[in-house]
Image (cartoon, rainbow, N blue to C red; front, top):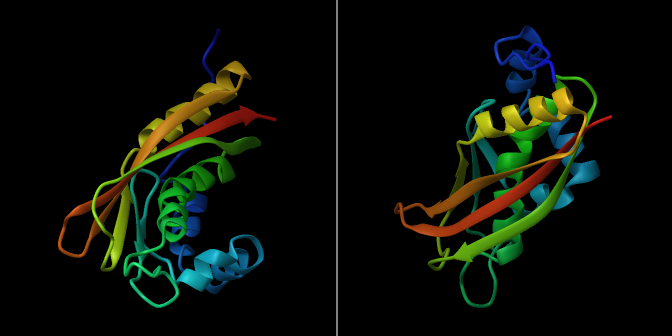
Length: 168
């Protein structure tokens, strides 16, 4: 099958505008409407690019469980958002493509008893997956890792999120 030109340009003005708006009031309104738990837990986007995203989960009364660690659901929300922001940025700036989480697996390694930062630096895999879905017209699954570390640098959780992309 003939490959189409690359439809995602990380240097385009539209992508740069979207990246500049990552912590804007408009995105916070989107969170309130579509992902209110992100606001409730106080999850913050530390940085975001088409290739790497960092998300921070505070250690606070809203995120902790009775065992004095961050509740697994808050960790899962941050783990998914870490790759989901990149995937959303990519499909927003290409042809119409749908995205859906089809699988999540996680290893909880240590107790998350301080602020935890999740990092996903596999944006290139997401870009290639979206491009393949557009080129072939078929669904494509891409699995990326999001690692959460405590403030002291200790790995607390490793999420493997599988995203499915399909051109509309």
